[in-house]
Length: 388
Image 1 (cartoon, rainbow, N blue to C red):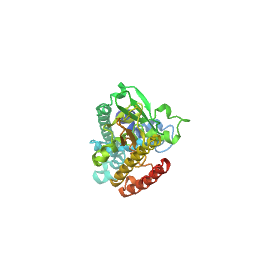
Image 2 (cartoon, one colour; image 1 turned 90 degrees about the vertical axis):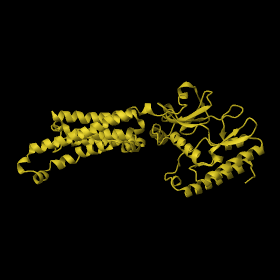
Image 3 (cartoon, one colour; image 1 turned 45 degrees about the vertical axis):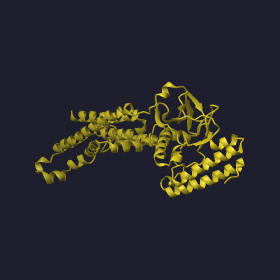
Image 4 (cartoon, rainbow, N blue to C red; image 1 turned 90 degrees about the horizontal axis):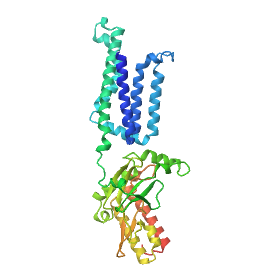
């Protein structure tokens, strides 16, 4: 009877972890791995089932190895979410329940049933096979109860987190407004205008575009593990960088930022960014400043656009801003013909395999200065701008 109760207890705990992992894509890899660890632990109770199949001392060992291997595979397939899950578990206030549970089902049963320990603590008559086996079952059952308690509480807390998540004040526009694709789009993200709301949203390309023949395998894989990962999603990180620039940068930079830049969530597209949608007097969306220079016929306007971009780059370099692409400014033409340079595309992370510029401010300044010098020289030579 006790074996049946133990089996049901650990299987419920494992199933709870699986349910949370399936609901929360941003933690899926780590929670599915933990679920497989629970299932592997539960295989100890099925020794009677595997005895006829494997003629070894531990007939349940192949099943344990299978579930552990399955957990590693699932964590690798969802590797962008594995670390996020473990960080969430580490911050959970009930973590001691999980730690003690794992200890009670792993090495403590062997320690508690060791003959030498019994002989040192009790009279020889108490150290029988039956008594040690009973203690082993008791310790494991206590561990299973700890794991079940933790998993149920974790499930209860995290199951409702999607409903408790504080949304962007404008997130309702995703359902209310019609989406209109704007801009050229990048290799990974698309931009959509939200009706006449004055806002636009950027998401990773929709799943139907992330297919062989339309997208490289490496990009599909990258989008797949970032789309629902709040900490690694480019749009989510872009909002974080926006808030950093808004609070730490001088007024010259802050006035170039959009008034609204908020993190939003879509059940199919994942995390995205909603921000102010800038348009020129003719109703067209603003474009990167190099392209605006190219279509301007007035040399005075070309020089003004170039001058503003150069000034912004100098300020960003002096502030050691985490800004990596000198071409990521956009030009707004005001109704009176005036020109403003806007920062609406933040490039939240370096594309280098070893992102030293993300760690060392002096290296970030040096690299952005070198890239800006090369890019501005390209602008001058291409469009006939003579000012330095």
